[in-house]
Image (tube, rainbow, N blue to C red):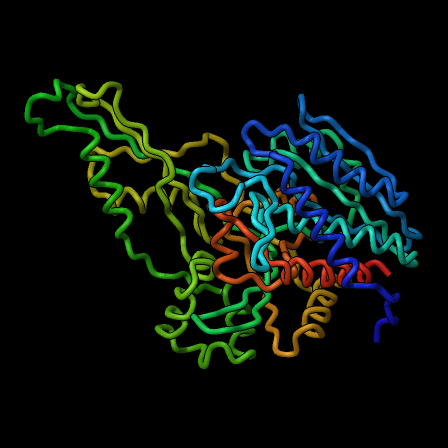
Amino acid sequence: MPDAPPEIDWPAVHAEALDVLVRYLQIDTSNPPGREAPAARFLGSLLEAAGIECEYVATAPERELVVALLRGDGSKRALLLGNHTDVVPVEAEYWDAPPFGGVVRDGRIYGRGAIDMKGTGVMQLFAMLLARRAGLPLRRDIVFLAVPDEEVGSDYGMAWVVANRPDLLDVEFALNEGASGMADFGGEEARLFAVALTEKEMCPLRLTTVGTPGHASRPHADNSAVRLAETLAKLARWDRSLTLGEGARDYLERLHAGGMIASLDDRATIERLLRASPDTQAAFQNTLNVTMVNVGIKSNVIPAKSEAIVDCRLVPGQTPEAWRAEVERYIDDARVEVSFVSNRPATRPAVSTWDTELAVVIEAVVREAFEDAVVVPGLSTVGTDNRFLRPLGITSYGFIPCLLSQAERDGFHANNEFLTVDNLNMGVELMYEIVRRVCT
């Protein structure tokens, strides 16, 4: 049995964490343009007030990371609590609450970054603060690292750290975003906690059509914009099967053991349950979504060239070239060119092992909090900063330790993003207990 934890006044901590998250959400770190330095200084000020060492590192003008260190006795290697301070831009006119107001209403905390990922950053922050206040006998160093620029590729964030400050990454384990607890599965209430060991590969495609330009006052049979629109509509109707390969076996077996699926041989029922949520469906399917369209130069000119960007995320085992060819075959139109947006060479996402002390601790903490919890190793359907750490040999897990509803999960990059107060409280408690056990 683990040692009895020090007494903590959780109601007081909950109130303090809520106040910190509200103030953090009020700092506009939309990326682009970034300008995350005030967020780094805000987080650092709270750590410094607790007597924790901090360093601020400029990665570009107005862009800083903050790294803090709580030292252990060195008998085990460090744990990294990694998070990002930037958020995606907003269309404020479509929000019901000010996106940078940190509004608390009906048990929800509204604001850009509440889910992605300022809320998780606050959970990690309090794990370190509480470890300091409790004077835990740490065997591992705890490293808190809040970086900019995750939302635009991390060139001035974690990728910059790997290239320029590898000394900050002398750790055994890393926790970041990438997966979470889910309050539902297959349309039913559940306590399903997924931990991301890897992530899907990003593979954005460019679709280009070229037609015959002309005056818009006349009938026209070779409009590139029309051809592109027809192609995009066809792609939107593409019903692709799920990939339930060898990598999915452990995931499905754990769902079966937890009573969430009745039979591992009933493919139709498994697909129906996985498709009930876009989150679980995305984990087993190459995804394809139109995100940008560039058409036309003037209202009365039929465009010669039309382009669209299609965001694609690939399941393990799928190569970008094979996927591009599959998309091309489905479109089946030689007049539509399908090409890669990036010319960077493809690299397979690295995979962290599940057979670790950190995994054992996560499972134990979650199961003690919820007797009927099902904990599954899986993959992140989005890109995270963990993709830079796994190739370094760092065991890196994506895990937000709370039970997010479908509405909360739908808030990633969406209007009216929110985190419930209950989930913030749960996340603060579970994150602290995970850190406490794995570091002591």
